[in-house]
Length: 341
Image (tube, rainbow, N blue to C red; front, top):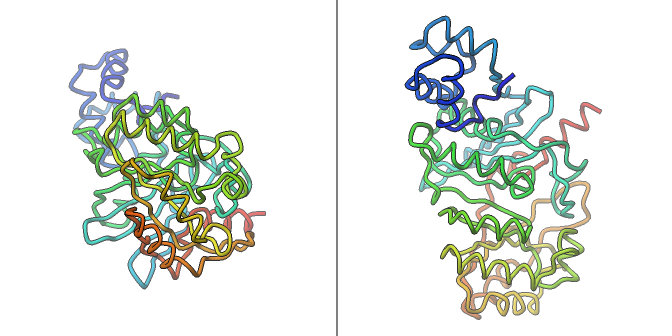
């Protein structure tokens, strides 16, 4: 069976030509798919013969809502989607004054092993397809009734570990014949796969690259993030500098504040020294407590922020959304897995 929804318009045109259809049909099918239809029967301006042909030849596997949580505090919505193979992934819709942002997953599970993240518990199961990534945006928008203007690739999985799929997803979601969400409204978060960051820079995309840093020194970062053992902080910052020089795009550094681990003054000073001379922004994140982790939220977020600002570094504290639901990445999926077990 053919995964037609993961095709771009040019591929879809060539595919339908092989089925004996004129080129204009591809745009019709593409637009229907990007409106979130659940079956080919909904494509009412296609002939019944073509619809039957598509049903016989192509996959169309929309996700089903397994669980849904809505915050009474701020309207944040957390979705646990069940995929066609039975696996589950998470998507979060966040409401901001500048528009609605959806945080999507790129893999089922994650193999990066970060100590503070529930997504990595149980490891990586498989990569998502471009269609499965796109469906998170489409069906979150449809189910919630809220138009999505911004996308964050910061859910379950490491986006750059599923590089080709992510690039295809970005192309699809950016298409004028689809959702037409501009690259400047998209953020991609990585734990620091340096070779893939260099590769991404070659595409000159206008998205925002967010690097999950979480510590400015190798000893601490390697404890929190196993990927650092093969990379190292110095190499990571060198790569980030190259990315900025190549793209001209300022990088955002994600920094989860962990009590007594990465929140000291000397670490703020070291972080500032790494960032000196290269435009960047530090996003301080109040840690979400994960039951299986001994790490606790820092009590020094404000002091750490002031210390960075004293060095001329732009630092903000991320607004915590969905405080009354399992909005932290991986938590809802983990609960579902434990319940299934």
